[in-house]
Length: 282
Image 1 (cartoon, rainbow, N blue to C red):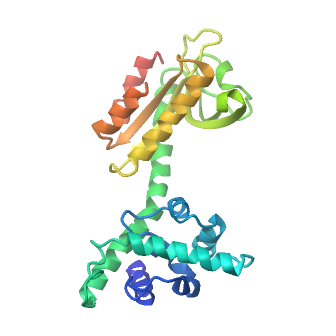
Image 2 (image 1 turned 60 degrees about the horizontal axis):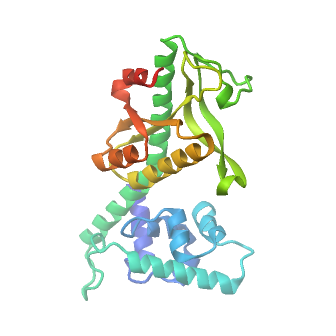
Image 3 (image 1 turned 45 degrees about the vertical axis):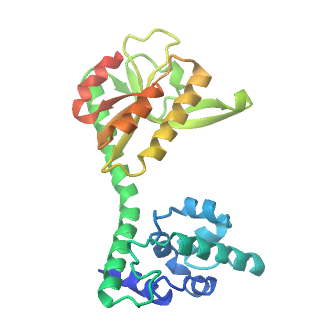
């Protein structure tokens, strides 16, 4: 209820989304999260920065500190606020703000409905990463229990072992794996959720990589599948075609998502069928 009231206050200062101006954002810098959730589709912080072409420092100051950056040039500040306002106005969701484009003013029920929807989006934007992180911890705990029941040992923090020199029958979580970028000119570390060296591995063998993924709906799976395909591409370009990079899935992933991953050479195990991990030689 409090979030809904906060959104209603933000709608009030923007003339119910009919007067989203640089001056309004300047006077009420705390309303930016509400404005981002008022668009179709809702805008993540990085997406707003990319679409508007504004300073990331400005947006993050508005988001995190709820105020304008103190050292930003006034001319540039005004220009960037105009760009932000223009994006919000252009992308304002007409299915939520049904009065946009008509001559009559919204009634109280319409305003309350709109505020409730935006408030729900705001709460979801905060809760979803928390839920996903909790899901990931639970998924990794399930992998740990399954492996230990089969005689595998988790590497300890003090064991400074590279992924490709892990002893057979060991595993670890959240390991950084170095990969080459730009044709080998640059090397960076990419994190992998679970790394398992099968018990019968020979010297020099690569471990099996798993990425824990969970979702309650199809939201953002398009972005995720591209990220996973990129990881697979980087690993293969660095270590060869024998790299085994797989997904440990929980939740709802449609056939389009799974088909895309399969086409990239990525296999998967469902959490409710965790015994299928044995099919990877583990």
